[in-house]
Every structure is written in structure tokens, then in C-alpha cells.
Length: 388
Ligand SMILES: [Zn+2]
Ligand SMILES: [Zn+2]
Image (tube, rainbow, N blue to C red; front, side, top):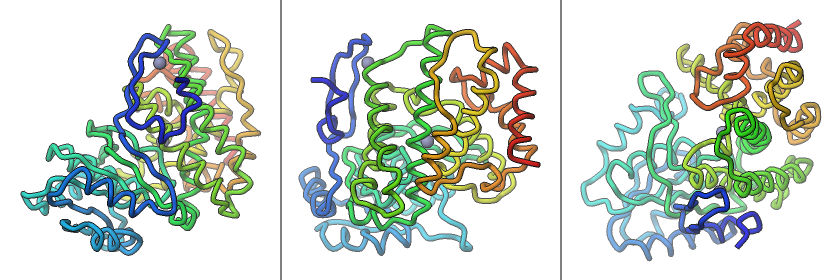
């Protein structure tokens, strides 16, 4: 069966020997995005266990869906992670520790009700307790739903920590449609970033002879294209546009699991965002939602590729940066680092030192190793475009 033609629900639980000579495996067994998702999630969980289920949510997602799950699941306990001093719940050691301490011993199964943060915390806690979990996604805001790793902040440093994929992903289409708009633009930005992620992978393939999987690339690209076509309908919150983003995000997360690496879904655009996030964490301020930064990061890296194209050792995929900017704008996403409160100094530093954020080969790795002066000049030129 051609994986690029399969829906995410068909891909769930699928294993195949790929023409890239690797076996790809989708750990998520069940995916439902629809109007009856809460009931379907309840039925699925009851099929998996007749023992105690722990529902993990925050104040907002408790109101949205946690409360309903509590009523519908016959044996469940709920733990609501509250905000502290009006600061949003964060995926850090303190909150993971808090939840771990509060888990009664008889828990057999976990249900995360929320998006990025709640999913990461539940992934980690369930993994440590060696129990499966299901996520009920409340916003199409990031691509980590299907992921097996969590991005956790430990001692003020953001680390990618091994965890497990959920066995099921469920989302109510109406709820996704009504999610705060900045969460929807974040999801959109994270999906659009995949354009550059794929360009970087091809660069790695052609220059570093890195392993590459065409089928996974085709699957990611089809998800991106679907979102892109729906950009103008996003502000109207058209159901199909919102569902496409959620599907694109889940698919992107799945491809990382299938490839056992984040290669299909992140490149230099993520590394500079990581640099900005680390700066916020160090200063003790909240950083923008991941995908809203990734959209801006993608714009910056497209500018970088344009500026240095005559210095690259192999031909790279042509991406029209101004078209990407206009698609992002059309969807209501930010495209300037100024709108994210990023200073000129930080922007320059992130371009010059962004390669230190990951061992993955990207344009930042290449330039910092082979053409540091070119990188420095290009960073300066990019800063001039936003700060004048
Ligand atoms: Zn493959
Ligand atoms: Zn991302």
C-alpha cells in the first residue's frame, strides 16, 4: 500500500518495509478526529482497560473536556494541574514531578486532555510508570501529538527526552475549530516549517550522503500542501482548514516516529527557535507558542538560503521565501522576529550560533563550519531587513 495515499487513521498501527531499506512503524494505534471524538475515546479506553484511568488536564481543558471524561469513564481519577501565580503550566521538571507525586498507585492507564504541555507531561509520566496513554487534543497547535519524545525544560535547559507515543489520538473537530486563534496559527506555522525541514534533509542527503526516505518526504509534503491550500480559510475557521492542520500536525509527528528521528519535520528553522526559547527561559519570561516562532524561523532561514545560494556546495531545493511569507500572513501568522519581541542581537546570535542547538546537519552547520564569514555577513544583512 502506498503510504503517501493513506489517511492518518489508516496509517495508525501500520508497519511496512520501505523502499529506503528501513522498516517504518507507526506506534499510534488509533486516530479519530470528528464530532463524536469524546465518546470514541471513552469506548477505546474502556476496550484497553477496566482498571483505573488517570485523567490529566489543566483548568481550561478540564472545563473543555476533562469534566465530560470524568463522567463517562467508569473508573477514573482526575488530576488538574493548576497555574502558579498566573504563569501558564510549563513542561518542566517541577510539573512532571508534581504529577508523579500525585499519582495513586493503582493507575493502569493515562488520558491527557490538552495540547502541547499536557501531552508532554502525560507522555513522560506514563512512560515512567510504564503504562500506556491516550491524548485528547484540544487545539491544533503543535506537531508533538504523535511524537515519542517530549521537549522538557530541566534546570532551565530545554531537552528532548525519550518518552512514548500515545496509543490513541482523539480530537473533537468543533473544539479544534473554537481553539484560541494563536494556537491555530501556531499549528499552521509548525506545518509550514516542514518545507524547510525537507530542504535541509535533501541538503544533508546530497552533501553528507545522509540516509533519506522519499516516501516519508512525500507524506510530509502532502500534509503541508493540504494546509497551504486552506490558508485563506483559516481566519474564517472553516472546519476543513482546521482539520487539515490537525491532520498535518499528527502526520508530521508520525513521520518522526516512523523515521525514529526528527529529520522529516525539523531543520534550521527549529534550531533558531530553540535558541530564542532558551533565551526566554534564561530570562524567566514565557516564550511564544512554538509554532508561531517556527513560522518566523522559516521566513528567516528562507532569507538566509537566498543570501548564501552562491556559496552552497550542492544545488538545494528552491523555496520561494516571499510566497511562504504571504501564505503565513494570509493565515494570520507572524512573520517578523520583531513581533515576537526578539532583539537584533538575539536574532543575529541565533543565526550565527543556532547550529549548536542540534547535531543535525543544516545550512547553519554547513556555513558555520565552512563559511563562517559568509554566515556572519548574511546574519547582519537579515538583521538590517527587520531592524532599521
Ligand atoms: Zn522509508
Ligand atoms: Zn515544531
